[in-house]
Image 1 (spheres, rainbow, N blue to C red):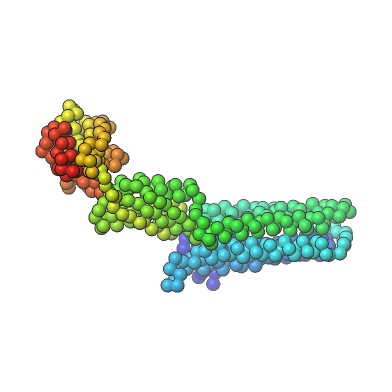
Image 2 (tube, one colour; image 1 turned 135 degrees about the horizontal axis):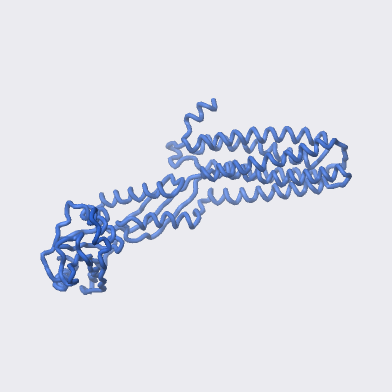
Length: 407
């Protein structure tokens, strides 16, 4: 049955489920061993720790159920059931609170008993400390690798067991030498468990209440969007967790007015985000054309810097000219040297990519770029290309100013 279930899971879900099953087996073994040793040693702290492991067994069962159904989608849940993992984490945290209460209650109300036991019991309890330590580290590492909050939560719980098991070991050492550490150790264990439960509850509730993802992830998404040449500005980037997956929403302005091309750009951005940022399930891009109050022209220049060049890729210079569409005047002007002048292959494309870093709206050259590599590069970025017969840069600028940005 488990094999058939694993066949239906994705490549990311299968190893998570496998670790969840391991967790159940480890917790079951720990519970049985601790209970047996607690009766032999007559230790309240060890019995409390066994109760803790018993609660962990139910937590492991809830973990497996959450992993199995968390990725399922239906008409009623079109965004999937990813948050079931976070609900499971909340359940585990509540179980931890219940465990802490029960341990504290027994420590306060139970009668004092002292049982003599052999030294091998002490050695066995000491060995038990290593089990949650090693498995907890393993489970947390797998949880982080696959971004599974349930595994991270369960692994953190195992790591918390290290502290409680260590306290039990110290209490048993004291009991072995006739020192009354047992009740104190039980209370300490209760406090440690309650602290672990609070941490799990707080982190899980943030996801369930759609708290934003961390700033570094949002900045990474924003950088991917800004790297798209067709994007003029990034207005906002929002993100939220849903289980181990991310949902991203961004509002951008594009240099494009054609809706079909704008849609292709948004799909390209979505694909790049999913490839760059781990565990992104959905990306929603809201786009609108840029409201233009100025146009930036990139003009290919000859070596004189005053004449228009006949060949785009071989142009030694480019003039960047900003024209104010409302005032109908030159707002700014900058001269760029062609850094790819000595390139023998793919020169035109490299020059086009270089110019796109300066966000031009229109590229002007005597050469017709339509149907050529640079023309395609500019077209994909929403940059218009025009061919001119004018020789003088100053004359061309006058024409652009008079024409309010149109030659």
